[in-house]
Length: 211
Length: 165
Image 1 (cartoon, rainbow over the protein chains, first blue to last red):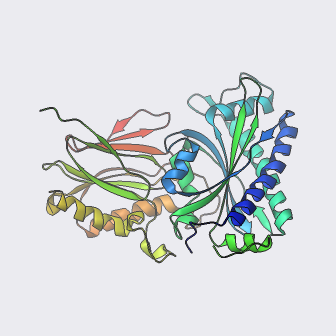
Image 2 (cartoon, chains in turn yellow, red):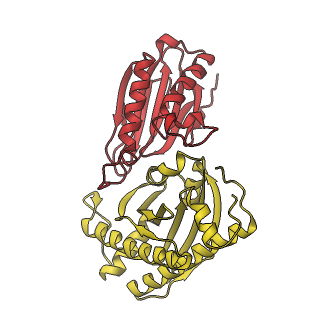
Image 3 (cartoon, rainbow over the protein chains, first blue to last red):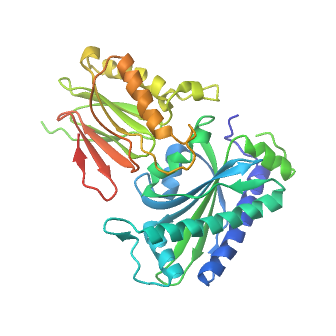
């Protein structure tokens, strides 16, 4: 199956999925750091591998990624992505320690990893449970996998399933932000359903499933 | 003569061939492997950014041959020969094949980095191309750049010193 052309209706449905998932995740995030969180309208991108890296800021951009495999009836991959500065801000806000450094002695701080992993777990959990309820499809996240490195290196790890089937990925990208003048936290949620999952998703939501 | 150096960038699941004084680079190698093949005297070099080990894994009909180790290496050799490299003088340098996430499960899909590295080594052995040096495995992403004049492969990792192999 090659899915390069999506109909407007299919695009809308995927957009709505991103909305519902990220909306729920934004609420969890707001509770977690006790601040107001905004979210943007999701963008649906059908991209090649190189374009996917460009979405995040190029293959060499430093990112913190928390990565989950979705298991269940519609398998796929979810990334929660932050830049290094944003990850540091987030850790500072959660630990209530404004001087927290992500890197201590040149390697990532253990506490920081733990905080980010758990935050990712909570946010992704709420993202998936919203999707799962909405579509009546059983979806469970794997344990979170954490990596802080170049975007290209990190993201290709999540493309393994996909890349055996196609050279394109449909990415449902939703940004959530908390903006106070300087300590903004912007998170990217990237949902990449496995190619075989699209039919199930479209079927569950009652749109024409021919991709 | 004023030769301008151009850096030719190779994307994911792509391959390209250059001649001196140009440089060839690829960014953000994680579990992928960057395989550089070169003829030192003719100063011709090619780089393949390989994503998956075997084309038999493909579940699509029209496969991108640059994506798999076993199909990309023969194509790279042909392109190098077309650019003036001598088949029998080709040498290889490799980098990449990292394990970006520490997966609890040891399923084969998750061990993709080491499998990519093994597949390329096997393919090069079958083609009788010696591997001069390599920097494989670990858990860090790499950006690599090859200069056909010096035949050095520059490797950059996050928070590490640049090194040459």
